[in-house]
Image (cartoon, rainbow, N blue to C red; front, top):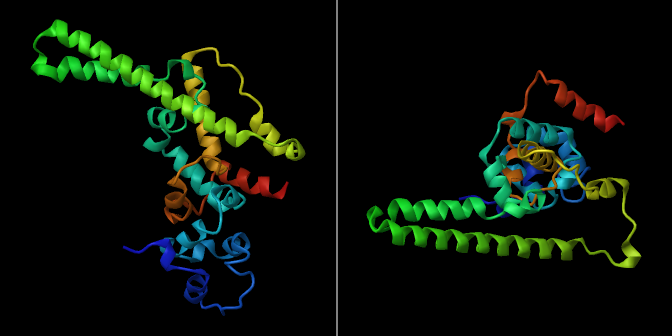
Amino acid sequence: MSSANEYNDKTALSYLGLPPDHSPSPATEPLVFLSQHLRQLPPHLLLYFSSVTTPRQRSSLALVRNRRYKYTASSPSELGFSEAKHEWPMLWEGRERRGLDEGQEEKEWAERNFLDGGKKQAVGKLGALLAEMEEEREADRVRMIRRAAAQDDFVPEEDEESSDEEMEEEIPPEEPESAEEAQAMFLRRVRERFIYGLLPTDIYDKVDWDDSWDEDDRDAEDRWFDEDDDE
């Protein structure tokens, strides 16, 4: 099976019929090169640019943001509530209930399957124990993620200055009034961070280079993204 490592900047140039010394160079100016030739390259060659650009850098390209927007609008399971809450727990404001869903699943499994449903009293105790253990395991996982995130966010005094954009990202979200609002706010946060390349995920490779998300007749959201580039 082919991999991105098999391709390089010369492969893309050769495919397009461009000379090796073409400017902009896909190796030294990948974003400029992509802005000119993204639509012309097939996905298997575009994978090269995953190794020389970051998802956040590629969000500067309106076409890439449009593709990501279309992907989020398709309600993919990867960005659904259950999977996103497990994958990016630091974005979920309902952290105090972390592990309860997983614990309930363990309890239900014991009640349904253990000993073919026999000895219900013993099974009930086992289910409760499994649920408690799963809740604790999940709580430990979140604590580890929070510690890692805190270490990653540490900035030495001489590097305290940050851009307005970075400061805006650090502003805590408004406190939701209900569980439904908390879930909606979380999903909106996940979608926005995905579009702008801020989620730690490998989904970008399959979305950024997939022209099936392109449309000739772009909607209002697409036009908004282009207008954002002109500001």
